[in-house]
Image (cartoon, rainbow, N blue to C red; front, side):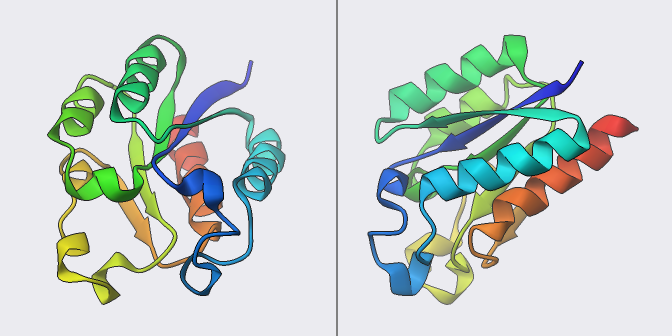
Length: 146
């Protein structure tokens, strides 16, 4: 049976491909889901996708993942830099967690250089565009196969 990976996207990622394509590219969140689903099948993983512009929705998704998912890939968007609550929720999850950022946050505004999520993440991928999601998925596939 395929292991479930919960892929969580935070605020404004529903506008991926439309919002600031010079920073975030032209791929949509649906394109990301399609690429992850295809790769997941080859790795023996099933991907579940969630996006919310609301912190509480993301926290509820993480809580639910505790019962169903083997791993989490999360792009918390701007909540990366502000949400202790999301960090606390991730700290209740026992499987591997990978933090993904489409842009290289370290080349952007200084407030983007700090991540609460990184305090829990087993790995951080930034600046690889939407390919960061599939890179995280590949790593999860390797870890979960061990």
